[in-house]
Image (cartoon, helix red, strand yellow):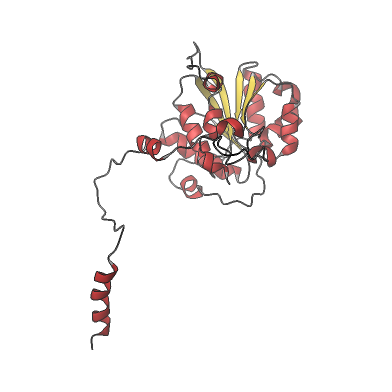
Length: 267
């Protein structure tokens, strides 16, 4: 089962300030000053990271000082973020691309990334960008990691001392007692290798040994589904464009063949 079946996985990890109260059932509190965050994402495959970025953009608790892309075709992922941010009126947020890696998966949102005219011709390199922001705001930056950890491992490898000046890392990753599809109302399947950790285990080991405070959202707490009722609330059946299409959703086989066969069989 892919992580797309739990599309709110990265959404829960995206709000560094309010994630902890939500886990304990408390009401989130808006801080006096928004928290500076960098979102490290593999946006462009499953849809959960797109929802996470959308939520972060709409959250006064957060000041997004950058978005970095990780895993696979990171440059195209960065172009996708360019378009996303421009479409919602936030092209001011910097976007940096991580080192590309080999991926056997299909980049399902490539057409969105390559469409439009918002994509920048190039992007700064993610490792240097993150280290620059940490140095600029020591002790103030939360790194929100909702993708495989290649960038984070590379940052630690390059400058572990500066990495330790992060305020904390909030991450979606791991599996403690529940695996994929273990939604709590069936017999437990036990933990399973989780996507973000599995794709770069050495980087995960570096992160957990880095000494930086971590807030971890594993599969145990993130498998929430956006069901039909909730989707209908987010995406009501209306559009800014006037209806211009008639769509056939069903057919009458008997009536069709009474029309079709005589016409083709006629002399």
